[in-house]
Each structure stands twice: as structure tokens, then as C-alpha cells.
Figure 1: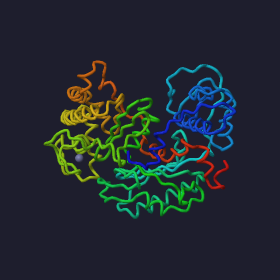
Figure 2: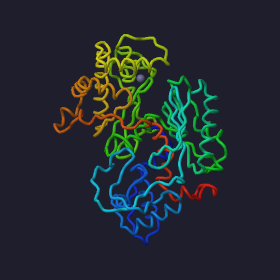
Figure 3: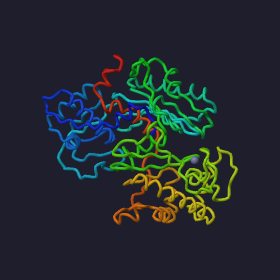
Figure 4: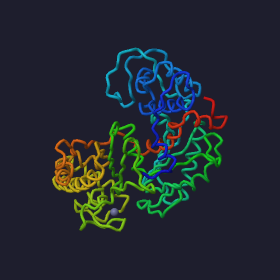
Length: 447
Ligand SMILES: [Zn+2]
């Protein structure tokens, strides 16, 4: 994970304060944060009964907390009773059956503070306003300008538009295809964009308008937080998607070129000493393999990304902008039963299995989420992947109860990096809803 230290510190906190209705001190603040977090994880809507159960608090405490959130314009409460909580994904997040007891429905209010999320991809940039529960309120996607200054101009214009339209914006979160230095939000190696290291957080902060409509940081500017796209996607899958409930989630993804990932451990991103962990794409799966941009050879990312797939099919030398399309066509051919295409997929799936073996040996996950084309490899050539994984898996030999194959699943979110960028920017609200809202400018404080 590549994110500012305050975000990591906030992730590391556990809010376990237990209060009574008469305790309105720090314990209540913790409980309010826990309530907002639960509502966020439940997709922005839940029955009052379920929230009460998940917090383990009494009905009177819940009443006090909900009235505070209502006053601040964070939630609305539907007094029409419901006995069957629902979730935007169509499944009940807890997996528990409803108690059948009628309960009021608590929903994030349209006026609730929100954040602006940006996903900078190799060929497109997406800017969205996202609210609690991971609800995308507005979304705009366009091509990425070829050079940095026009891109910064585009981002500034789009973010300003979203800022003006919503009015209660807390922060901006960006997911970028680069390791990001924790101390200053510097994107150190956007190799696939062909850029040198750029101080992305500072460049954007100085360009954005004074925080008249949104929240202001200590310097008066709208807070800008930058994170690695794969890390943020992994975080989003853990909170909202296929990684829900995992104690140790290993997330791997590939899109255009390269292979990234994340490790979410006990609910928090593992991001190393400087913010650069994890870089699963640069473990070696074939010392005699293709050269990698990192200077090594046979890295997982050059053996199992789209370039690796095309190379396995005998196709090399394609321009970068044609690689994703060609790989997608190859995957479709494999799915349609084309022998050579399927052979290429099987070769790459085995490489992915080798990489997964090393990664699971290192991290002991209870769930592995594969995203992008990695999910297609798993669907088309699961046997090759799992054979390679099992043969090299320490756990397969050490613990007869371990199931390194059974823990593999595929991603559940279409916009994981964008939602992760939103979660990065929402973290302040999740940890301190009262203080965060009260720090909004006066014009934006009232719902
Ligand atoms: Zn490498």
C-alpha cells in the first residue's frame, strides 16, 4: 500500500469503546465512528436492528447516535418498518438470516458529506463523487492526455466541477498505477505511463481551488490523498467485494500491462516501511524469462500479464496501446475453444500458480482474490493454475487442513480502484465523523 501515514494510522485503529446513553465523551465518539463504519461496510443502508446488533449497543445508545447523524445530515431514517435488510449487491453482507423483527431503515442521506475519487489508468481517467457505502453519485470518464501538464489541467477541471456540484466534499482520493511514497504522495515509478517520479499530491493540491466548498486541511487546501491503484482496489474488495470477512486477503490484478496486488491483513493494508508494499509483480517465476522494467528477468508481471499471454501465443512487438485489445481477443478465442489460444492461457496460468505459491507461502492468506485477466486465467485453466500452486505450496505439504486452492476466488467489484480511492478519502470521516463534519466550512456544514 502506498498512502499517507495518517491514513495508515487510522486504519490501524480499532474502535472498541463501550458506552451508555449518558456517556457522551470519547467513548461515544468511538461508537459513532464504529456506527458510520458499519453503515459504510453495509453499502450505505441497513436496518436499525442490524446496526444495533453489529455494534452490540443498547437501543437507547443507538437512538442517541442516529439522532446525531441525522442532525448532521449524514443519514435519513425511514420510519416505515422493514424486516428484511437488503444490500446494493443483492446479498446480505453478514450472511445471517433476518430476525424478522420490524425495524426502521437507516440510509445515507443525499446531503451527506462525500468525497471525490479519481482512478488514473493507463488510457482513461475516471473522476467520481462517491458517498458513504461506496455509492457512486456522479461519474465521468475520459481519455488520459499524453503528457503530465494537460492531465493535471484535466484533473483540476473535473475535480472542481464535482466539488462545485456537491458542496460537501471532504477530500480527494487518487488511485494511480505507480508505487506511491507514503510521506508525500509522490508517484515514484509510473513506468507504464512513461513518466518519471512526480510529486502528484503536491502538484494537485496547489492547482485545486481554495477549499471554499469542501473540507480544508491545516494549510487551508482541500486534502488530497494518493495511493497505488492495486492496493486501493484490494482494500475495496476487502471492504465491499469478494474479500469481505477475510482475515488475510491476498489480492492480485492485471489490466493493461503489469501485475499489481495488495495484502489486507486484519482489515488493514500492509504497506511496508515506505508505503511501497506489496509489489507481487516482481517476484521471480522464471529466472530465464523475459526482461522486466524493474531490471530483473522472469518477474511474475512479465510472465503472467497481457504481454506474457501474447508472448506465450507467439505474438511479440505489439505497440503498448494494442496489447490489452490483443490479449482480450486471445482470451475470447481461448474461451471459444481455440487450441493455440488455450495453450497460451494454460502456460500463463501455470506461471501464475507458481507466483501464487511463493506469495501464499509468504503471507498465509485465507482468501486470494484474482482480478482482471487473472480471473480469466483461473476460469479457463484452473487445473494448470492449481497444479502449479499446489506443487510449490508450503501449506499444501505442512497442513493437511490447508486449502490453498479453495481459498481462490475472483473479484466482485467493477470499479475497485475507484472505490478504493474513495475509501482512502473517506477514512477521516469513518474514524472521526463528528470532528470531520464539524471542520467543513460553515456553508457546507449544514445538511
Ligand atoms: Zn520486475
